[in-house]
Picture 1 (tube, rainbow, N blue to C red):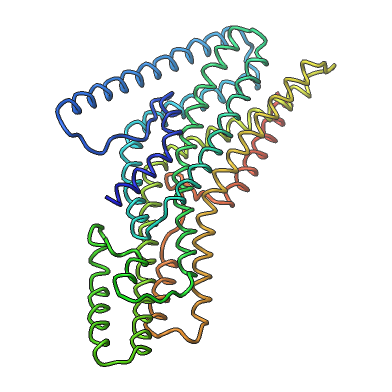
Picture 2 (tube, one colour):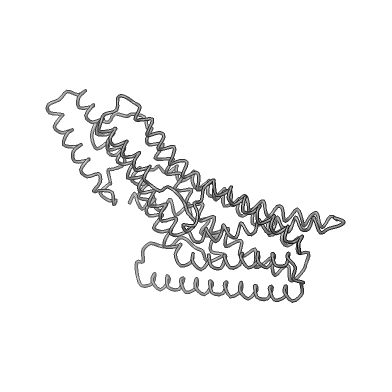
Amino acid sequence: MANREKLENIYFLFQPIHLISKLTCLTILKKSSIKNNEDKISRMSVNINKICALILIIIIICASTFVYVYKYIHYNKQDIIDHVHLTHFSICISTAVTGLFISVLKVEEGVRKILHIISEFDELLKIPRYFYNKDTKTVKIGLISLVILYISMLVCDFISCNLNITCNLFVSVIDYAILIHFILIAQYITVIFLVKERFQLIKHFIVLPDIKYSTWYEKFERLGIININDTKNAKLLTEETRKFVIIESQTHKILNVNTINQINYIHKQKVHFKILRIAYETLCNVIHLINTIFGFQILLSIIALCTEVTSNFYYAIQNMSLSTHINAWDIITISFHIIWAIQYLSLLFVITAVCNSVKMKSNETNILLQRLLLIPELHPETVTEIELFIQQISNSKMKFTAWGFFTIDSKLMGSILGAITTVLVMLIQFHKIV
């Protein structure tokens, strides 16, 4: 029952992004159980509607793309800026449609698995309810910021078109493709944010103040293993629990109170770090699932964002160089391109920053454990458990990847900026030669 309550709290956190995701058929929440035939029929009807909506979206995008490309090729001379424009358009549309199709196939079921694992983690460490309220506020603020960013881009796009029908067609298609990428990125960042907050919890539990309990039941309740038989981690803790109870029952008969408290405290420390090791391994499994479920889509989204940044900076530079007399409309157009490029660049920065923050939390946990080993009063069994924890952190591959092509961290941002600069220089030089 407690685990179900934790799962419902996590599902509630995902409700806002789930509602927005319906605009692109990228829903991420579904009922985990089907009670009767009516529910099965209802579920089948929802799936059919979702498939039909997906097919309709793809057909509209592809048809609009074909019409726009045909008109653009037919009515424009083919110089370098036209080729850049068509390449930019093609990459953005193709990555969005591919990401949409792949996500519909695997994200919903994958997110369900991730949320169930996280709920087990929360039950293991007895996460309080107020923790979810704080996470919900943070997610809502981030989602509202993303919506404001997208709406501002829509306004700038339609203003720049100046009632041109072909341009408005381009804007409608490209902006919907960008919406798909934005929703994929929002889902990805939200899941990673949950993982980051739980790494912070592990760090917090490591440095909890020492508290004495009167009975073994209270000790294990505080450590979060009262209901451990309901989780997959039961076998790892059963032996330690049994030894702890036997020792306590025996020592009450033959030892004084001080000795009993000392033995209890030693085993409490050992079990405490074993629980944290299990929790840490659980989060490592979640990261592996995130890479499996979102890796390919986030690769496509990063490619699309890099294309948007490069092309918009290129359009701004070309407008400045081609305009002999810059008027107010030219300034507005150039400003829009620069604003769009900066917005896409900031979104890339957010992706890398969130992924890098998880890696930093893991490193901070490792450093904290190494500092604990410097405490001379630690019992040898506790020292052994901490050393195993440090070895576990060192051996775990704590990284987010874009389908294995590259690691998403702070170093990636430098590589992206370098690649964008190189491509811009090449395009400008090629334009001068032509």
